[in-house]
Every structure is written in structure tokens, then in C-alpha cells.
Image (cartoon, rainbow, N blue to C red; front, side, top):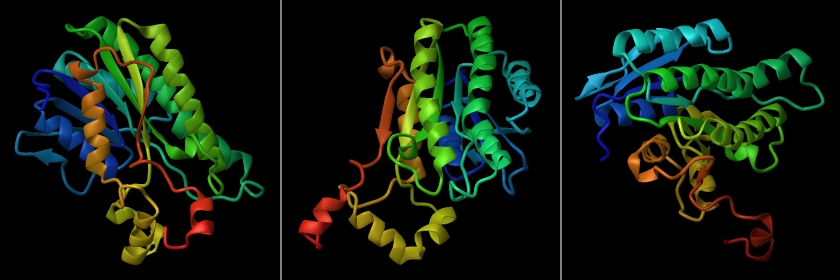
Amino acid sequence: MTDYSGKTVIVTGGAGHIGAAITRAYLSAGANVLICGRRLPAQPIATDTGEAVFVTADIRDPEQSQHVIDVALKQFGRLDVLVNNAGGSPPAKAAEASPNFTRKILDLNLTAPLVMSQQAYVAMRDSAIDRPGNIINIASVSGVRPSPGTAAYGAAKAGLLNATRSLAMEWGPDVRVNAVVVGLVKHEGGAEHYGGAEGFRRVEQMLPLKRMALPEDVAQACLYLSSEQAAYVSGASLEVTGGGEMPVFLYLSDPQA
């Protein structure tokens, strides 16, 4: 495992299912980790090697996202990695979604990560002893294929992938910027969405690796992208999808596929 001792990592939405796994992975690797969210988690996010510092913040507000970075700098003296993990969207029919709903989804999934990346860039440029710093954007398959029922979310994630490439080009060599394109993830929070254990089983049969991703799979991708092993990787979109979703025509020709 890459040693992150002495490094400082911020994970937005670090108390959620995927965010907590990312947080624990960096803690286990020795990093100082600060997480943020709108609500204090019921339990601290911790491992045997340490506990994440929590800051209450709505990252859609630039002043609050800057406060998160300021706390990290004050407490740890530097910022090395930002994982823009906070995001998501409830389902909404495109023909019925209000302009206000669309704006909120774009704010959370695109504008907030962009603004916080700007703020983190300045902090990394000015505080990091060992350059480059690293920004990792948690994207989604919704940004690379149609996203019916969550059109604004898919559009935001597509924009985030484009921004990843643009920022990597603008901010090198001070900061590397990459994205993780997350596929279908299995965790207790998704049980209702997928239809419980049977729903999970049916989805897994449609994936080449015959299982859904675990939050830890996403966490390991983040560890890699911000490590020295990925020193020449910037502007990349790493797909953590288990090989992707099977195309429909395979089921038309072979219902057992």
C-alpha cells in the first residue's frame, strides 16, 4: 500500500457509503483526512490508524467550501489531495423537473466541485512540499451513457469529466487532476433502489465480472490515482465499472446471457 504519512486529504461527502470507504482507505494509508458534509455523521469515520476530522459544510456555498480548505490548512499545514466525492440526484422525469431542481443538481455535481477545485489548487500550489498535488473527481457512468430519469445529473457528470481534462491541462505541473467513473455500486443505501437482494442479484448477472462494485473498489482507485504509481497520469478518466453494462442485443439473442 502506498504510504500517505504526513499527507493531508480532503474528501467531500466523506461520511456517505462511498465517501466513508475512500476516507478509511486514506486513513489506513497513514494520511490526515478531513471530511465534510451538511450533517454530522452518526459515528466518526475512523480506522485503527486514525480518525477523520469532520467539518460541517454545504459545498455548494463557496465560502463554506473555502472554510473546509482553511480548516485543513490550519490543522495540518498543507493540502495534498482533494477528492470531490459529494454528489447525487433523486430521480426526476426530464419533462417535469423544475428549473430550480435542475440548478440544484448542477450546483452540487458540477459547480461545487469546480469551485472547490479552484480553491484547492491555490492551497496545493502554495502549501504542498511535494508537488504535484492531486484532485480526484468522482464521476459516474451516467456521464458517459444516457441517463434517463436523472438527465441533469448525467449532464453534470459529463461536464465534470470534461472539466477534469481541462483542469489537468491548465494546472500541470502543480496539480494532477483525474476522475473515477463509477459504475453500479452495491451498498445498503442502494437496496431499495435496486429491489433488495434479488435486485442486486439480477443486476450482477448483467455485469461481466458478475458482481457490483463495492465502495472499497472506488476507494482503491482513488489511492492509485493520487499515488506515485500514477505520477504520469493526469486528465484521465478511470472506469471502475467491472467491464461495463451488457448491451441489450445480447439478451435478445440469448435470454440466458
